[in-house]
Image 1: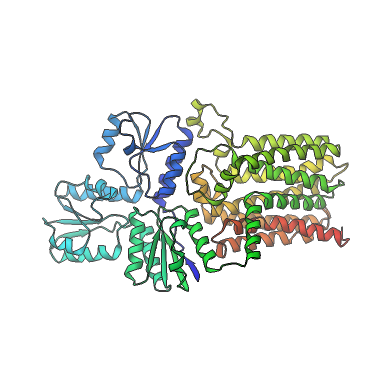
Image 2 (image 1 turned 90 degrees about the horizontal axis):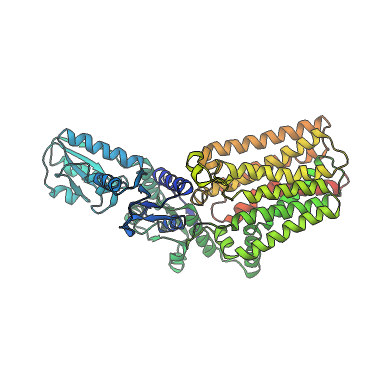
Length: 580
C-alpha cells in the first residue's frame, strides 16, 4: 500500500489566526480565559488549550469575569453584548471570511433582500450569520429544500464558508429557476475550495481515502462526503487510533487529507501509522527503527551532532586544544539544555500529544535527572583539563539555556511588554539555539587555546551558527502548528514558510562563501575546502524535508542534524588521512 498526502491538509488561515489570538492571550493574561463554545472543531487542539487554562464558556455558565474569546465560527451578534454586560473583556477571533459573510448579509438586508443561507441549520457559523439578517432569513441544506422554501423577492443567497461548492451551485440554480431577482454571493472560502478540489482530484487517483479531523467538524465532514461521492471507500478518523488498518490493507493506493481544523502532528501520526502498516518491517529492522526513535526523541542524536560540529570547528579554527574534552562538553550541553527545556513544567495536558512531546512527558523524571548529571559532568570534564575560563563560559551558557523557559517578567508588566520569558520573544527559539551552540562549539574551546587566529575563529562561528540555525529552523517547518499550540514563536510562524526557506538557503550560500573565501585567503585550516560539502548537505536536507519526508518526526530529525554530522565526519576523515 502506498499513501498519497494532500498538499492542503492542515490548519486554514482562519483557524490559525484564532489559535494565535487565544495563545497570545493565554501567555499574557493573568485572568481566566473562556471561548464561546469550542474555539475550533478539533478535540485534540481543544484539549491542549484546556491545558493552558482556556475553558469553554458553555461549561462554565456562572462565569462573569475574565476574557471571552469569540471563536472562529463567530457568534450571534446579541451574544457579544451579553458577554460585555456580564463583565467579560471580549476578544474577537472570528474567521475573516465569516466576518465578510456577516457584512454581506447586513448590506443586503438593508437593501430589503430576503437572505437565504446555504449551510447546516444548527452549525455555529450559520447561527451567527442568521443574527445579521431579519426574521425572514431561511436556511437550506440541499437543492430540494431550496425548491420548497418560501421566498419573497429580491433574494440574496450566501453560503456557510465551509459548504460543499457543488451543492451550493445546485442550490443557486434551483433558486434562479424560482425567482427573477437573485444575488448569489461567493462566500465559500478559497482554502475550502482548494481542499475540496484536491479531494476530488485525489479521489480519482486512489482506491480509498482517509480523512483526518474532528467528527463534529463541518469542513472535515464535507471532505469525507466529497470523497464518498466519487465512489471510493472513505474513512473519517480523528486520530491514528481510529484507523481500520485491516480494512485499509486491501488497497494498493490510499489518499490522505485533513480538515482545516486538524493539527499537523495528528495528520502526521496517521500518515506514519499507514506507512508502518503498509511496510511491515522485519524484527531486526524494527528494532533498529525503535533505537533511532529513542536516539532522536531523547536528544541523544542531536547531542552527537553538536559534538561532531565542535570537532569540526576546533579543526577549522586551528585551535591547539585536545578536542575530546570539548566534544564531550558540547554533547552534555546540547542534551541537558534541550531536555531541561522540554521537560520543564508545561500547562498542556492532553491525550493526543505530538510524538516528541509525549516522549518527554512520559520520561520526564529520568531525562531531567540525566540532564543534571550531564551538566555537572561537562563542567568537571573542563575542570579536569584545567580549562577554567572555558568552564566559566560553559556555566554561563547553561544558565542562559535554563532561563529560556523561566517566566522572569512580573505579571503586571507582561501585557505591556508582550512577553513573560525568553521563549515568548518572536523567533527566539531558532536564534538562541544557534547562538548557544556557537558559544559552546567555538568560543568555549577557543578560550582554552594558547593561541588562536581571530579570522579562523570567526569563520568557525559562522559555520556553527549557520548550521545550527538551519537545523533548528528546519525542524520548525514541520512543527508550525505544534510550536504555536505549545507557545513557541518560531521563524516559520513569524515570516511564513516560503520566506523562511529562502532565508535558510541564503544562510547556506553565505556559509559556502565564507568557507571558500577564508580557505583561499589562508585565514583558516584547509579543512574549510572539505567543509564546503556542509552547505550542499543543508540544501539536500531542505529538499528532502520538503519533498520526501512527510510523516515521522524521527526522519525529520535525522535530516535536520545531517549537515552537523557531516561536518564532524569530514573533519574526522581529514584528520585520519593526515591532511590536517
